[in-house]
Length: 506
Image (cartoon, rainbow, N blue to C red; front, side):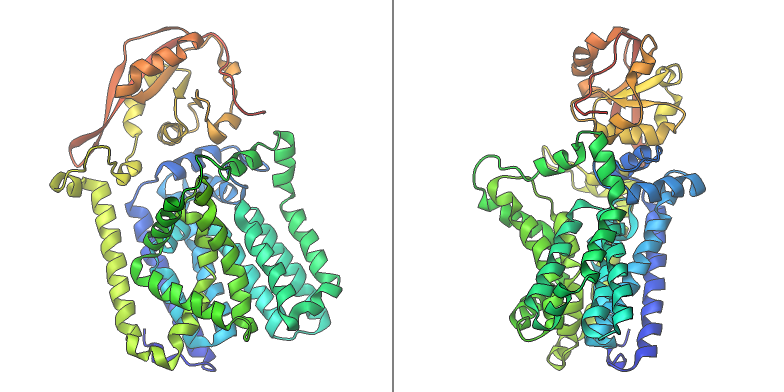
């Protein structure tokens, strides 16, 4: 891509270049999606989404709804990723359009390239069956709509419609993930801080937009009201203090964010964010993006400080809005020395190398054969192994239902066996699998308990009060590249004596 030809005002060239880039990256994601099997989170999501519901335990329902209908049309597995790939292609266009409106076509193309070359946005948000893709799409749509309101000076009638559209976009973000509330608070902060935007506080349209957003997320509220607000309690518990002040975890969180962004992209993103904050008081365009970005980045980067749980991908919706700032920062004449074309090619080559290594390791395990992992280390690509070998196990074939002792195993088991074989998770953390069936319906019937081979004795001791007796464990081995990788035990469990108690209200 020749960024030098993408100048503000050359709108058609910008559009054509953007569409070409989006198509190329979409094809790359489709190839990546086809080459790599679903991991724990995706398998779990697909299994939970078999039951169409107003909302779900872990997250709001939008990505589960997408997974439900994608699985019905395309089948369960890697094909379920197709709508998520297409959705991120639309996200790329919205981010390009937003950046072009604020800073010109050259900045828009740079931002688009950087976004698609970021490992997290290429793989997780852009390909996998997780809530981040729909969230980013909705947030990008909201930002693009609000930028027209803030900087295009629309007519009063057009402004009213744009506010309602922004409320719809924010409602879709709320249907995707609960942390959508932080960019929404950033919008409120922008309207209050920007002198040119405070006029909206005296008009009814923004308040009607908030009503529209609440109406869109109503299914989440209804489902939680029926289930004792369990989803809010689960997510809120992650922010609870535990173990005192832990500044070391904040550093670990920052390192995780750099890894998700990649060091070669994190550096210009951080520089652009600092530049945006420095210039925000004089430039409402930058203030707009800073207000959208900082609440999510700051809150979740600092969450581990008081001992709470923190995961790097929680900050990514905030970093999404740094890409337009990076596009503007890199498009300036002083950035010419950075050789953007070479930087883009090198970044693409590094991302491709990472993807090839990941897919190769998932298929063959060659890397860990050559360089064995240390004690306690886990190969994350083992998540993508197909558990289909369970289908041939006599204990599974003869069982009325299957029991897992971990929600992650429940997802892999359920995806491997298909919707015809009920799967339950007998543990104090069954997550959303607890809501797709009731073990009370199977009292008196036989089950197959599937656990890791080295946990079979502990599983029998834990579940003995719920079954009349157990048969001899049957070994099932999952292989990769001709080598044994995961050893499972299928334990025949005769006669469920009573339903397993759930930690959640149905």
